[in-house]
Image (cartoon, rainbow, N blue to C red; front, side, top):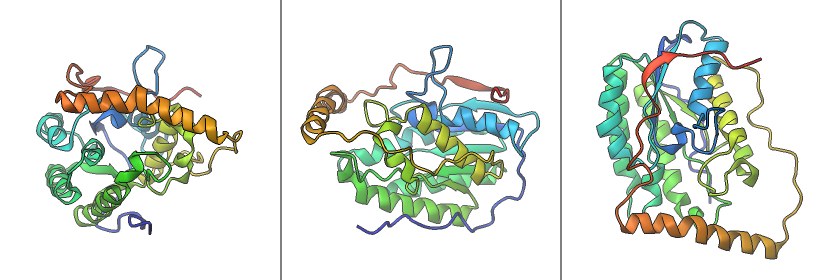
Length: 275
């Protein structure tokens, strides 16, 4: 399959500033930061790390940050619940990353998702906020999830087009070959490890003009080869422990985020990362 989502960074009317005073993250478990454990036992994640990079890098200044992302949320829920709350906080930078949970579901339509996403991005841009989006990761090496690859690619193409039309930034996760390494992913193969979240944050900072000079693209050194029989056993265990429960929640119309609230609902000051 051709890489349908490949392309340059958005070429539309991007803003020229590189400093923001209030950043709000919207989305699902990816932006909530699942599997990137913080010292306090909560989750950190790429958005938290990006906020720190913006303070430490070229953006500088007195940045306040809120994170409204909640695991398991579908794009319509993100737009209906989180977008109004974000607008009330009057941000000048918003990351809006959603649709991944939707694409995993049979029968989902990436064209309709894109229409909903563009409406949300347009609303944010009209409010005066800059917007950062992200493409989906290429699932080519993931069993079962790879069946959604064509839908992810179509949705990614829409994201690039939305960015050009609305003047938004894009983090190119599809093009991050470093994320093709199994070691970048937690045991559930859905959420990134700390290393994965950190690399996404480094690319996001670079896209926003606050690059820290960190290498987010180079793959990890080769690891030991996994014997085929062991790989098959690991795949079977993954299906039992993670795919089965996920399907069960869908059948019961439940979500992993049903009892979860936003981890950082109000903007607060951001400290630069430790040296």
